[in-house]
Image (cartoon, rainbow, N blue to C red; front, top):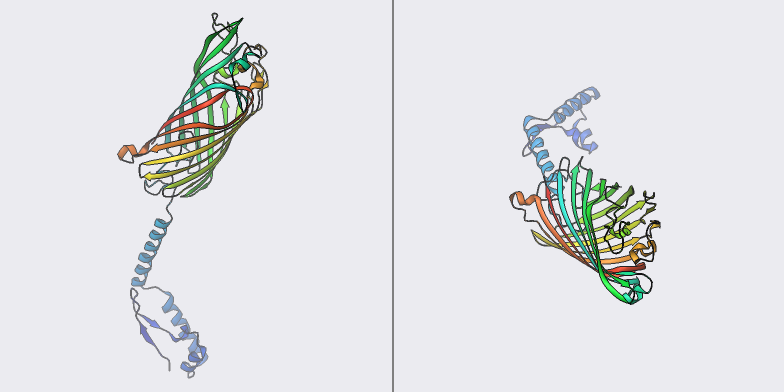
Length: 400
Protein backbone atom coordinates (compact mmCIF):
# COMPACT_ATOMS: atom_id res chain seq x y z
CA UNK A 1 0.00 0.00 0.00
CA UNK A 2 1.40 3.42 -1.02
CA UNK A 3 0.46 6.94 0.07
CA UNK A 4 -0.45 9.66 -2.51
CA UNK A 5 -1.85 13.13 -2.00
CA UNK A 6 -2.38 16.33 -4.02
CA UNK A 7 0.05 19.23 -3.48
CA UNK A 8 -1.18 22.76 -4.28
CA UNK A 9 1.37 25.57 -4.61
CA UNK A 10 0.30 29.16 -5.41
CA UNK A 11 0.98 29.86 -9.07
CA UNK A 12 1.43 26.18 -9.97
CA UNK A 13 -1.06 23.60 -11.21
CA UNK A 14 -1.94 20.88 -8.66
CA UNK A 15 0.25 17.80 -9.03
CA UNK A 16 0.62 14.41 -7.47
CA UNK A 17 3.17 14.22 -4.74
CA UNK A 18 5.25 11.06 -4.45
CA UNK A 19 6.74 9.82 -1.20
CA UNK A 20 10.10 9.00 -2.80
CA UNK A 21 10.83 12.72 -2.87
CA UNK A 22 11.57 12.51 0.84
CA UNK A 23 15.13 12.00 1.93
CA UNK A 24 13.91 10.07 4.97
CA UNK A 25 14.49 6.61 3.55
CA UNK A 26 13.09 4.85 6.62
CA UNK A 27 9.76 6.50 5.81
CA UNK A 28 9.98 5.26 2.22
CA UNK A 29 10.75 1.75 3.35
CA UNK A 30 7.81 1.86 5.72
CA UNK A 31 5.37 2.96 3.03
CA UNK A 32 6.59 0.48 0.41
CA UNK A 33 7.36 -2.52 2.65
CA UNK A 34 4.52 -4.50 1.01
CA UNK A 35 5.75 -3.76 -2.57
CA UNK A 36 8.21 -5.92 -4.46
CA UNK A 37 11.24 -4.28 -6.09
CA UNK A 38 9.78 -4.19 -9.62
CA UNK A 39 6.67 -2.36 -8.49
CA UNK A 40 8.79 0.08 -6.50
CA UNK A 41 10.90 0.96 -9.56
CA UNK A 42 7.74 1.41 -11.67
CA UNK A 43 6.25 3.79 -9.11
CA UNK A 44 9.53 5.73 -8.87
CA UNK A 45 9.65 6.26 -12.65
CA UNK A 46 6.06 7.46 -12.79
CA UNK A 47 6.65 9.85 -9.89
CA UNK A 48 9.76 11.26 -11.52
CA UNK A 49 7.96 11.93 -14.80
CA UNK A 50 5.01 13.55 -13.06
CA UNK A 51 7.27 15.89 -11.08
CA UNK A 52 9.67 16.91 -13.90
CA UNK A 53 7.13 17.75 -16.63
CA UNK A 54 5.93 21.31 -15.91
CA UNK A 55 2.29 22.14 -16.18
CA UNK A 56 1.00 25.10 -18.22
CA UNK A 57 0.35 27.16 -15.10
CA UNK A 58 3.82 26.39 -13.74
CA UNK A 59 5.40 27.27 -17.09
CA UNK A 60 3.64 30.64 -17.18
CA UNK A 61 4.66 31.41 -13.59
CA UNK A 62 8.32 30.56 -14.27
CA UNK A 63 8.43 32.70 -17.42
CA UNK A 64 6.82 35.70 -15.71
CA UNK A 65 9.03 35.34 -12.65
CA UNK A 66 12.17 35.01 -14.80
CA UNK A 67 11.25 38.18 -16.72
CA UNK A 68 10.77 40.08 -13.46
CA UNK A 69 14.14 38.90 -12.12
CA UNK A 70 15.87 39.79 -15.37
CA UNK A 71 14.23 43.21 -15.45
CA UNK A 72 15.32 43.86 -11.86
CA UNK A 73 18.85 42.73 -12.64
CA UNK A 74 19.08 45.10 -15.61
CA UNK A 75 17.80 47.99 -13.54
CA UNK A 76 20.38 47.33 -10.86
CA UNK A 77 23.23 47.03 -13.36
CA UNK A 78 22.48 49.30 -16.31
CA UNK A 79 24.09 48.61 -19.70
CA UNK A 80 26.48 51.48 -20.37
CA UNK A 81 26.86 50.53 -24.02
CA UNK A 82 23.65 52.43 -24.77
CA UNK A 83 23.16 55.77 -23.09
CA UNK A 84 19.70 55.99 -21.49
CA UNK A 85 20.14 59.71 -20.65
CA UNK A 86 19.55 58.96 -16.98
CA UNK A 87 22.19 56.58 -15.65
CA UNK A 88 24.82 56.49 -18.39
CA UNK A 89 28.42 57.41 -17.65
CA UNK A 90 28.53 59.95 -20.45
CA UNK A 91 25.19 61.66 -19.76
CA UNK A 92 26.51 64.19 -17.23
CA UNK A 93 30.02 65.19 -18.27
CA UNK A 94 31.90 67.22 -15.62
CA UNK A 95 35.20 67.12 -17.56
CA UNK A 96 37.20 70.35 -17.07
CA UNK A 97 37.69 72.50 -20.17
CA UNK A 98 41.43 71.83 -20.34
CA UNK A 99 41.16 68.02 -20.29
CA UNK A 100 40.91 66.45 -23.74
CA UNK A 101 40.13 62.84 -22.80
CA UNK A 102 37.69 61.64 -20.14
CA UNK A 103 35.61 58.90 -21.79
CA UNK A 104 35.04 56.92 -24.98
CA UNK A 105 31.85 57.28 -27.00
CA UNK A 106 29.15 54.78 -27.83
CA UNK A 107 29.10 53.12 -31.23
CA UNK A 108 28.08 55.59 -33.94
CA UNK A 109 28.16 58.61 -31.61
CA UNK A 110 29.85 61.84 -32.76
CA UNK A 111 31.14 64.73 -30.70
CA UNK A 112 32.29 68.09 -32.05
CA UNK A 113 34.16 70.48 -29.75
CA UNK A 114 35.49 73.99 -30.06
CA UNK A 115 38.12 75.02 -27.54
CA UNK A 116 39.71 78.44 -27.00
CA UNK A 117 42.93 78.72 -25.00
CA UNK A 118 44.76 81.87 -23.99
CA UNK A 119 48.07 81.92 -22.14
CA UNK A 120 49.62 85.13 -20.84
CA UNK A 121 53.25 85.50 -19.78
CA UNK A 122 55.04 88.49 -18.31
CA UNK A 123 58.55 89.05 -16.96
CA UNK A 124 61.42 86.57 -16.87
CA UNK A 125 62.86 83.98 -14.56
CA UNK A 126 66.07 82.02 -14.27
CA UNK A 127 65.34 78.61 -12.81
CA UNK A 128 62.70 79.38 -10.19
CA UNK A 129 63.79 82.96 -9.45
CA UNK A 130 62.34 86.05 -11.12
CA UNK A 131 64.91 88.37 -12.70
CA UNK A 132 64.65 91.91 -14.06
CA UNK A 133 65.23 93.19 -17.59
CA UNK A 134 68.64 94.58 -16.65
CA UNK A 135 69.99 91.10 -15.92
CA UNK A 136 68.61 89.69 -19.17
CA UNK A 137 70.00 92.58 -21.22
CA UNK A 138 73.42 91.99 -19.72
CA UNK A 139 73.48 88.70 -21.68
CA UNK A 140 71.26 89.37 -24.69
CA UNK A 141 70.38 92.20 -27.09
CA UNK A 142 66.66 91.97 -26.28
CA UNK A 143 64.28 90.53 -23.72
CA UNK A 144 60.65 89.56 -23.78
CA UNK A 145 58.38 91.64 -21.57
CA UNK A 146 54.92 90.33 -22.41
CA UNK A 147 53.57 87.44 -24.48
CA UNK A 148 50.02 86.47 -25.39
CA UNK A 149 49.41 83.09 -27.01
CA UNK A 150 45.94 82.20 -28.33
CA UNK A 151 44.82 78.89 -29.75
CA UNK A 152 41.55 77.92 -31.42
CA UNK A 153 41.06 74.17 -31.61
CA UNK A 154 38.41 72.04 -33.28
CA UNK A 155 38.11 68.48 -32.03
CA UNK A 156 36.10 65.68 -33.65
CA UNK A 157 35.44 62.31 -31.99
CA UNK A 158 33.60 59.23 -33.27
CA UNK A 159 32.75 55.93 -31.60
CA UNK A 160 33.82 52.99 -33.77
CA UNK A 161 32.35 50.56 -31.24
CA UNK A 162 31.55 50.59 -27.54
CA UNK A 163 35.23 50.65 -26.53
CA UNK A 164 37.10 52.25 -29.45
CA UNK A 165 36.89 55.96 -30.31
CA UNK A 166 38.92 57.91 -32.87
CA UNK A 167 39.79 61.59 -32.38
CA UNK A 168 41.17 64.41 -34.51
CA UNK A 169 42.36 67.86 -33.33
CA UNK A 170 42.98 70.83 -35.60
CA UNK A 171 44.59 74.10 -34.42
CA UNK A 172 44.78 77.74 -35.36
CA UNK A 173 47.40 79.62 -33.31
CA UNK A 174 48.40 83.25 -32.88
CA UNK A 175 51.45 84.49 -30.96
CA UNK A 176 52.16 88.05 -29.91
CA UNK A 177 55.30 89.18 -28.05
CA UNK A 178 56.37 92.61 -26.82
CA UNK A 179 60.11 93.02 -26.40
CA UNK A 180 62.60 95.52 -25.05
CA UNK A 181 65.67 95.98 -27.25
CA UNK A 182 69.02 97.42 -26.29
CA UNK A 183 70.47 99.85 -28.83
CA UNK A 184 73.63 101.51 -27.57
CA UNK A 185 72.77 103.42 -24.43
CA UNK A 186 69.10 103.47 -25.26
CA UNK A 187 66.27 100.95 -25.12
CA UNK A 188 63.16 100.76 -27.29
CA UNK A 189 60.16 98.47 -27.67
CA UNK A 190 59.62 95.98 -30.42
CA UNK A 191 56.75 93.60 -31.19
CA UNK A 192 56.59 90.27 -33.00
CA UNK A 193 53.50 88.31 -34.03
CA UNK A 194 52.70 85.18 -36.00
CA UNK A 195 49.45 83.35 -36.77
CA UNK A 196 48.18 80.44 -38.81
CA UNK A 197 47.25 76.76 -38.67
CA UNK A 198 49.12 74.57 -36.23
CA UNK A 199 49.90 70.87 -36.17
CA UNK A 200 47.17 68.23 -36.54
CA UNK A 201 46.73 65.40 -34.02
CA UNK A 202 45.04 62.06 -34.76
CA UNK A 203 44.46 59.50 -31.99
CA UNK A 204 42.67 56.29 -31.11
CA UNK A 205 41.16 55.82 -27.64
CA UNK A 206 40.43 52.37 -26.23
CA UNK A 207 38.58 51.62 -22.99
CA UNK A 208 40.29 48.78 -21.14
CA UNK A 209 37.56 49.15 -18.52
CA UNK A 210 34.13 50.57 -19.36
CA UNK A 211 31.65 50.33 -16.54
CA UNK A 212 28.84 52.54 -15.35
CA UNK A 213 31.01 54.36 -12.82
CA UNK A 214 34.59 53.61 -13.90
CA UNK A 215 36.58 53.89 -17.10
CA UNK A 216 40.23 53.17 -17.84
CA UNK A 217 41.29 54.53 -21.23
CA UNK A 218 44.52 54.23 -23.17
CA UNK A 219 45.28 56.53 -26.09
CA UNK A 220 47.87 56.50 -28.82
CA UNK A 221 48.25 58.82 -31.75
CA UNK A 222 50.38 60.93 -34.05
CA UNK A 223 51.24 64.58 -34.28
CA UNK A 224 51.21 65.50 -37.98
CA UNK A 225 53.44 68.51 -38.79
CA UNK A 226 50.92 70.70 -40.64
CA UNK A 227 51.94 73.88 -38.80
CA UNK A 228 54.63 76.21 -40.18
CA UNK A 229 58.06 75.88 -38.54
CA UNK A 230 60.01 78.02 -41.02
CA UNK A 231 58.40 81.44 -40.49
CA UNK A 232 60.59 84.48 -41.09
CA UNK A 233 60.42 88.15 -40.16
CA UNK A 234 59.44 90.78 -42.69
CA UNK A 235 62.15 92.74 -44.58
CA UNK A 236 61.53 95.68 -42.24
CA UNK A 237 61.64 93.66 -39.03
CA UNK A 238 64.00 95.27 -36.53
CA UNK A 239 65.34 91.96 -35.19
CA UNK A 240 64.75 89.28 -37.82
CA UNK A 241 64.66 90.90 -41.29
CA UNK A 242 64.04 88.03 -43.73
CA UNK A 243 65.43 85.71 -41.04
CA UNK A 244 63.82 82.75 -39.32
CA UNK A 245 61.96 83.61 -36.14
CA UNK A 246 62.82 81.88 -32.82
CA UNK A 247 61.37 78.53 -31.80
CA UNK A 248 58.55 79.86 -29.62
CA UNK A 249 57.15 82.04 -32.44
CA UNK A 250 56.77 79.13 -34.88
CA UNK A 251 53.31 77.57 -35.30
CA UNK A 252 54.39 73.93 -35.54
CA UNK A 253 57.25 71.67 -34.55
CA UNK A 254 57.98 70.18 -37.96
CA UNK A 255 58.18 66.59 -36.70
CA UNK A 256 55.99 63.48 -36.63
CA UNK A 257 55.56 62.77 -32.92
CA UNK A 258 54.09 59.90 -30.92
CA UNK A 259 51.22 60.82 -28.58
CA UNK A 260 50.28 58.56 -25.67
CA UNK A 261 48.07 58.84 -22.62
CA UNK A 262 46.32 56.77 -19.97
CA UNK A 263 43.23 58.05 -18.17
CA UNK A 264 41.41 56.70 -15.12
CA UNK A 265 38.09 58.21 -14.09
CA UNK A 266 35.56 57.46 -11.36
CA UNK A 267 32.11 59.02 -11.53
CA UNK A 268 29.57 58.91 -8.73
CA UNK A 269 26.16 60.57 -8.64
CA UNK A 270 27.58 64.02 -7.85
CA UNK A 271 31.31 63.48 -7.43
CA UNK A 272 33.93 62.71 -10.09
CA UNK A 273 37.65 62.06 -9.88
CA UNK A 274 40.26 61.46 -12.58
CA UNK A 275 43.98 61.12 -13.08
CA UNK A 276 45.72 61.23 -16.43
CA UNK A 277 49.26 60.86 -17.77
CA UNK A 278 50.13 62.27 -21.22
CA UNK A 279 53.32 62.25 -23.25
CA UNK A 280 54.67 63.63 -26.52
CA UNK A 281 57.66 61.65 -27.77
CA UNK A 282 59.78 63.22 -30.50
CA UNK A 283 62.19 60.86 -32.25
CA UNK A 284 63.48 62.70 -35.32
CA UNK A 285 64.71 66.20 -36.23
CA UNK A 286 62.73 68.43 -38.55
CA UNK A 287 64.12 69.71 -41.85
CA UNK A 288 65.61 72.77 -40.14
CA UNK A 289 67.77 70.44 -38.06
CA UNK A 290 66.26 70.36 -34.55
CA UNK A 291 63.43 68.83 -32.60
CA UNK A 292 61.57 70.08 -29.55
CA UNK A 293 62.09 68.17 -26.32
CA UNK A 294 59.86 65.32 -25.16
CA UNK A 295 56.94 66.45 -23.00
CA UNK A 296 55.18 64.77 -20.09
CA UNK A 297 52.00 65.98 -18.44
CA UNK A 298 50.14 64.66 -15.38
CA UNK A 299 46.62 65.82 -14.48
CA UNK A 300 44.57 65.16 -11.36
CA UNK A 301 41.11 66.66 -11.12
CA UNK A 302 37.93 66.39 -9.12
CA UNK A 303 34.46 67.77 -9.86
CA UNK A 304 31.24 68.13 -7.88
CA UNK A 305 27.71 68.61 -9.26
CA UNK A 306 26.09 71.24 -7.04
CA UNK A 307 22.98 71.25 -9.22
CA UNK A 308 21.82 68.85 -11.95
CA UNK A 309 23.01 71.26 -14.63
CA UNK A 310 26.20 72.72 -13.16
CA UNK A 311 29.45 71.39 -11.71
CA UNK A 312 32.68 72.90 -10.45
CA UNK A 313 36.14 71.38 -10.66
CA UNK A 314 39.64 71.74 -9.27
CA UNK A 315 42.56 70.49 -11.34
CA UNK A 316 46.29 70.27 -10.70
CA UNK A 317 48.55 69.97 -13.72
CA UNK A 318 52.23 69.03 -13.59
CA UNK A 319 54.39 69.55 -16.69
CA UNK A 320 57.88 68.44 -17.56
CA UNK A 321 59.57 69.32 -20.87
CA UNK A 322 63.07 68.49 -22.05
CA UNK A 323 65.41 70.92 -23.76
CA UNK A 324 65.44 71.31 -27.53
CA UNK A 325 67.65 68.75 -29.24
CA UNK A 326 70.16 70.23 -31.73
CA UNK A 327 69.37 73.74 -32.95
CA UNK A 328 68.43 76.11 -35.75
CA UNK A 329 71.87 77.22 -36.91
CA UNK A 330 70.47 80.41 -38.48
CA UNK A 331 69.44 81.84 -35.10
CA UNK A 332 72.11 83.96 -33.34
CA UNK A 333 71.87 82.81 -29.73
CA UNK A 334 72.86 86.23 -28.31
CA UNK A 335 69.84 88.03 -29.84
CA UNK A 336 67.29 87.11 -27.16
CA UNK A 337 66.58 84.23 -24.74
CA UNK A 338 63.98 82.70 -27.10
CA UNK A 339 66.68 82.27 -29.78
CA UNK A 340 68.79 80.08 -27.49
CA UNK A 341 67.82 76.38 -27.39
CA UNK A 342 69.09 76.11 -23.81
CA UNK A 343 66.23 78.36 -22.65
CA UNK A 344 63.50 75.77 -23.26
CA UNK A 345 62.04 73.06 -21.07
CA UNK A 346 61.73 72.68 -17.32
CA UNK A 347 59.18 71.82 -14.66
CA UNK A 348 55.93 73.58 -13.77
CA UNK A 349 52.80 72.97 -11.68
CA UNK A 350 49.55 74.84 -12.37
CA UNK A 351 46.23 75.05 -10.51
CA UNK A 352 42.90 75.37 -12.34
CA UNK A 353 39.36 76.19 -11.24
CA UNK A 354 36.58 75.20 -13.62
CA UNK A 355 32.84 75.23 -14.27
CA UNK A 356 30.71 73.05 -16.54
CA UNK A 357 27.14 73.91 -17.55
CA UNK A 358 24.92 71.17 -18.99
CA UNK A 359 21.22 72.13 -19.13
CA UNK A 360 19.80 68.67 -20.12
CA UNK A 361 16.69 70.19 -21.74
CA UNK A 362 15.66 68.94 -25.18
CA UNK A 363 18.41 69.36 -27.74
CA UNK A 364 20.48 71.21 -25.10
CA UNK A 365 20.98 67.82 -23.45
CA UNK A 366 23.60 67.15 -26.13
CA UNK A 367 25.39 70.46 -25.62
CA UNK A 368 27.58 71.68 -22.79
CA UNK A 369 29.90 74.60 -22.06
CA UNK A 370 32.96 74.54 -19.80
CA UNK A 371 35.53 77.10 -18.67
CA UNK A 372 38.74 76.96 -16.64
CA UNK A 373 41.04 79.58 -15.20
CA UNK A 374 44.58 78.60 -14.27
CA UNK A 375 47.37 80.08 -12.15
CA UNK A 376 50.97 78.90 -11.72
CA UNK A 377 51.92 77.25 -8.43
CA UNK A 378 55.53 76.38 -9.21
CA UNK A 379 57.95 77.00 -12.07
CA UNK A 380 61.53 75.80 -12.37
CA UNK A 381 62.60 76.48 -15.94
CA UNK A 382 65.76 75.84 -17.91
CA UNK A 383 67.84 78.98 -18.48
CA UNK A 384 65.98 82.29 -18.91
CA UNK A 385 62.31 82.07 -19.83
CA UNK A 386 59.19 84.17 -19.57
CA UNK A 387 56.94 83.60 -16.53
CA UNK A 388 53.46 82.19 -16.95
CA UNK A 389 50.88 84.48 -15.32
CA UNK A 390 47.52 82.96 -16.19
CA UNK A 391 45.71 80.52 -18.42
CA UNK A 392 42.12 80.71 -19.71
CA UNK A 393 40.36 77.79 -21.40
CA UNK A 394 36.80 77.78 -22.79
CA UNK A 395 35.22 74.71 -24.34
CA UNK A 396 31.87 73.91 -25.95
CA UNK A 397 30.87 70.43 -27.11
CA UNK A 398 27.95 68.92 -28.99
CA UNK A 399 27.13 65.20 -29.24
CA UNK A 400 24.96 63.60 -31.89
